[in-house]
Length: 455
Figure 1 (cartoon, helix red, strand yellow):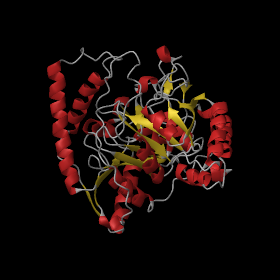
Figure 2: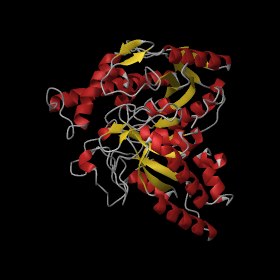
Figure 3: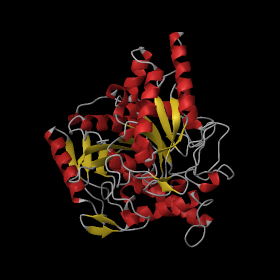
Figure 4: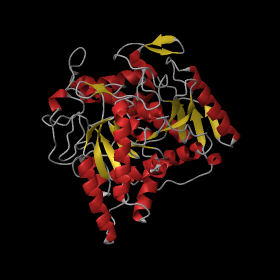
């Protein structure tokens, strides 16, 4: 059973294609896994088991006829409960959308299905994707498979939890302030926040069905999985123009090239100015930097000379515009002048970071100031090495790269003294996904695997 449950999407697709296992066997194994473990974790909030099995039978029949459905042929997936999926409840954890069933697929669901994936259901989120935990009035709280009293992160917390628990091999999250990276870090899996506009936002909530599209900047949709190869595979399925989100340009996506570690020039930082960091996370990043130097990597501790506080302030002001139809901005809505000045500030930060990545292939830095913390009400301070820190700081290692649109791979590099996973961000120049995926793959080969939750 483990050879199915813990196989990667890439491995399962190959096994199904070569008819070493059937799609029905794979889907049923994952449905049994969901039945066994989801009651405790509460990650899958909508499930279409009968429909998934029926689709798997069709997939197997097509393969028997010599018809190959695509790179994810027969692979079971779930989708974060914000991606419009035809005939399947899609709520974003928002009570007014409790009974919303889209008539058409958004781009993510459509492209996964076109690639042969079988959608089992939807996974839990924070209400309208607006928190670093995954809890809402419709479905309650999702728990971390590593420790049920800890959060899996948010807002793609259900997505990270199902992958970590072996319920599916692949998920698609979204990230406007760390919502792919924080859950990947908390749950010990890998995740990719692509370059802004690499992937279409068509069919993504919280752009509500009855409102004009407002999420035109900063939000990025990307895969979450067990392996870097799966991130690469899934990105190639979902990336590129779709005729709906007209902000997505036809930028080529190069192949990921396996390069020796010694060919990279990397920067690292164990913290950002004025942000706290857990002692175990700092030590893990410092050990990694030392290991990489020993492998012949040109690596140095470095950050660009920018005002990190101002960068976060610009991002916060722009987010008010993005969420203007569903949240009341503090102090009222921004004026057109405020908006344009914020965009001008954004351009300035993009230029500085791009110049930085002209000198370095990537930056290694923390994902969050602590590992998966105990469940709490939103806003309640979070202890970091015994000192309470403001809840609002939790996404601040991530948010700046939403402002600037830079791609980020998150991978686990160890565990803290409580046995919880520690992840890092690997950040690169805009449109450099192939490069940073290659770097992530090379780094993953020199760090010890974090293992699996004890379920």
